Amino acid sequence: ASVINKIAAGEVIERPASVVKELLENSVDALSTRIEVDIEQGGAELIRIVDDGEGIHPDDIELSIASHATSKIADADDLFSVRTMGFRGEALASISEVSHFRLRTKQHGQQVGTEMEVNGGIVKEPKTCGCPEGTQIEVRQLFCNTPVRRKFLKTQATEFGHISEQFTRVALANPNLHMVLRHNGKTVYELPATHRFIERLELFYGSELAQNLIWVEAEHEGTRLWGYVAHPSQSKSTRKGQYLFLNGRWIQDRSLQHALGEGYRGLVMIGRQPIAFLFLDLNPELVDVNVHPTKSEVRFRDSQVLYRLMLSTLRNKFLSMDL
Ligand code: ADP
Ligand code: MG
Image (cartoon, rainbow, N blue to C red; front, side, top):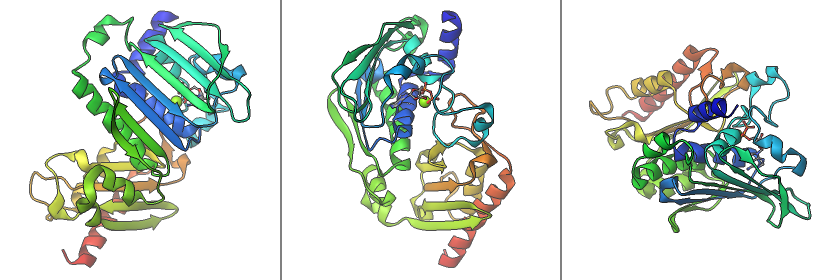
């Protein structure tokens, strides 16, 4: 089983940033209000995430790192109406297979917490421990038992850059969460909880961009598109300022990216990309999020409708502004 697990692990866990993504999503799913992430050496040495979420019941701890064990789906039909971020039950199993992994958790109202250690897939007997309510996960020496993969880690700065991007996506999608990111003991982001998306955005992009953003909003048969787009003059040379969220999770979608570009057609200089932070809220039954292990690509039942919604929303907005 170990070989199979290591192969499966490689599919989900490519680099430290993949670990951060999975752990952040779990903390969001656990209804945390505060999430702190500590990284050492670009994540190669340590990834620690501490949340104040609902925690894991002592009876479920061993199950939580078992492959394909998830508390989030009851039967196969549920796969098509996934509302939580995680649902495959593979992340903790994969991460603990290729690292020195330690989980501490305590549910609200419990007297003591539970601690469990897994070293390269070998599970130690859980024991009780003192810890605050919530869950703390430490991942040390990622890829310690897959030397080739460890060797292919890039520089600290590069790996941390990927981590920071994953953190940013979750932070933008969840402004109501207090979130902290530290690297080698230095605070990189400290984001207080806010009800206003734009306030969070400012912390990443500065107030000049944030103050000049254009609000857009549209609805079509229960599907809602909303968010902010930048004035065409504030475009970028890369797509790095383009964020699209589906039901609270960052996604990548070529068709919608294309629609965005078309919406700005003739307004941005050739070779420049618009900046946009757009949210799509739609019935989860109209999306299959289960097409890729890392879940950033989705399949829509009717992508044409969304394409037209995106395009017409932007065009109408820019026409009304007489750009
Ligand atoms: P999935 O998220 O797909 O269910 P994971 O391997 O990521 O699978 O997590 C396994 C299970 O462990 C989750 O279903 C959840 O019950 C539990 N879990 C993981 N992280 C946390 C957390 N931070 N707080 C509470 N429960 C957690
Ligand atoms: Mg998960």
